[in-house]
Image (cartoon, rainbow, N blue to C red):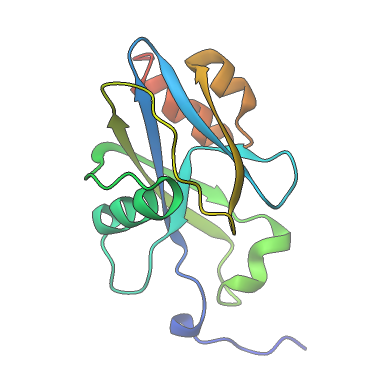
Length: 149
């Protein structure tokens, strides 16, 4: 029998995705430490009591060292939480709401990666970045924000 977990002791089922790019259509992609081969934009879960906007800025700073306020794209995704990560959430939680933000930099720069989370980065053409993404919502966000699709 599963033990009941209270909502506040578990991860909040809301997150942010921050697409970082420069013109012409170059996107910063980060390779996660775990699982192997998992590439993504900046992501992270909202803490209890934290706004999506505040979370986007915090995650951007923690994962890249860039300290500016991301722009809310207005995109919101809903997706099923992968079974291997469900133990982080309350027992009845199976999906996550993701708020999408963006940052357009004047030029590509070397990010300061959080070594506990990421092991590599690449600046890629938007279409290459979309192909590299583990998450389909990440690829769709790049298409919308960077390519205007």
